[in-house]
Amino acid sequence: MSISVNGEPHPFTGDPRTSLLDFLRRDCGLTGTKKGCDHGQCGACTVLVNGERINSCLSLAVMHDGHEVTTIEGFGAPGNLSPLQEAMVRHDGYQCGYCTPGQICSANALIDEIKAGWPSFVSEDLEAAPAPSDAEIRERMSGNLCRCGAYANILAAIREVIDDQAEEAAQSREQAA
Image 1 (cartoon, rainbow, N blue to C red):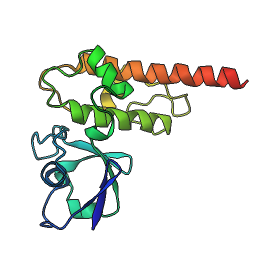
Image 2: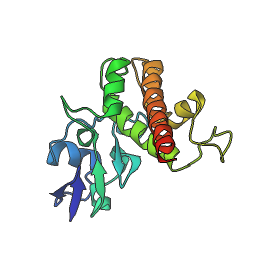
Image 3: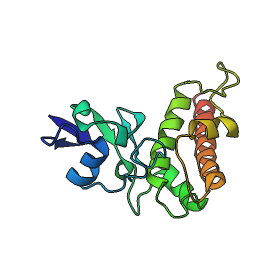
Image 4: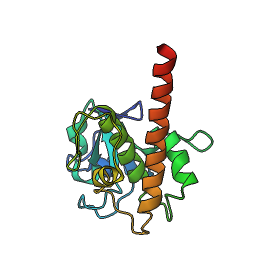
């Protein structure tokens, strides 16, 4: 079996009880994804599987044959950060940094979910253009804990990226008209 991780195939032949998190860290050498609680409660291990966020500590590697897994290493690198990574740096949304990989993976999924029109528990208008309130962003990020309490900074970084993308989309529509 093989799992595509950040666009590269990684064969898996290990113990079928191996979590996706342990496979990524030990077998793939991708240590950006963190093991926080190992119970799916903190979000430090959040990765994307086929574009959807999951807690990799709760998922077995054998469940992901043929799937595309994106870890923090798949979003950018020093000198070539993604817009969300840059915003996290600008807004000091990382403090100690332990939860940051999971926060960034989750926030990238959040942005894609909003673009796709997925409602959240606190979505007020399901027909409205994707312009989430701060309460909605907080609710969507609620599975990712930050022990340093950098929530306001993380929110500011996510808000900046969402607002920048909305502005770029508006400018594209104006140019096309």
